Amino acid sequence: MNWIALLLASVLLISCTAEPQSYSEIVPASTLKTYEITSEPDDSYTRWQAYNEQRLAQDKWEAYVDEEEHELEVDVDADDFVQCENTLEVDVNVKNLGTVDEQVRVTLHNDKLTSQEKIVDVEYGHTRTVQFDVNIRNAPRGDYVFKAEVFRDIEFDRNGDIKNEGEYEGTDSEKVFVAQCD
Image (cartoon, rainbow, N blue to C red; front, top):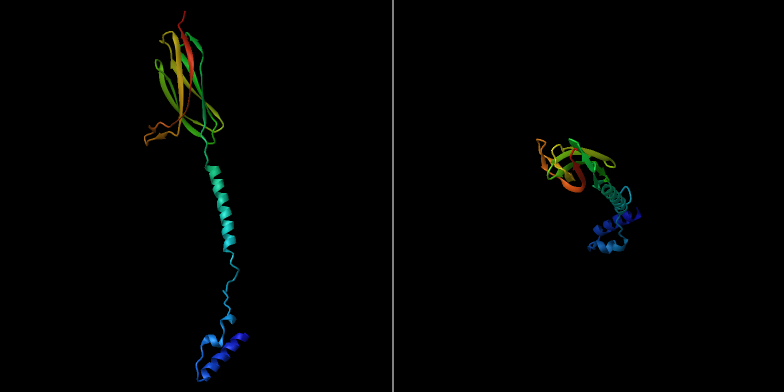
């Protein structure tokens, strides 16, 4: 408060004297101090650091959560020798070793006997067995190789037809000998 009184007295003296004086002659610059009036100290840098640490932790969590792993294992199982049968049962085991549930398209193919496909859901950590029945009633005697393939990320159109056949995940095959009845 004393400097305000001094300033007022100086202004009064200036107005009373005949010779004008400059402001810097009356109040030297070294005596003037300026202050910013705030309710709390500026902690912008500290707040930024806390925000940045939180954002980095969130990014790491999102990367962990969003990282899906797709891994399917395929195994074909059928009798090695079939005699006097009308149908052959071929099982395709699809094991989901990934981290997400999958909807898969399983195909079974043999050039002479069959070409079939089925779409099934396989939960992560589980195995799903897909059964195919193959008509072998009129099949000539001989070896037949049944090849299974598995695809994931299938896309359908609005009618429920397959629009995109999916991404190839794996294959397996099984050889079966078909004998005639004696």
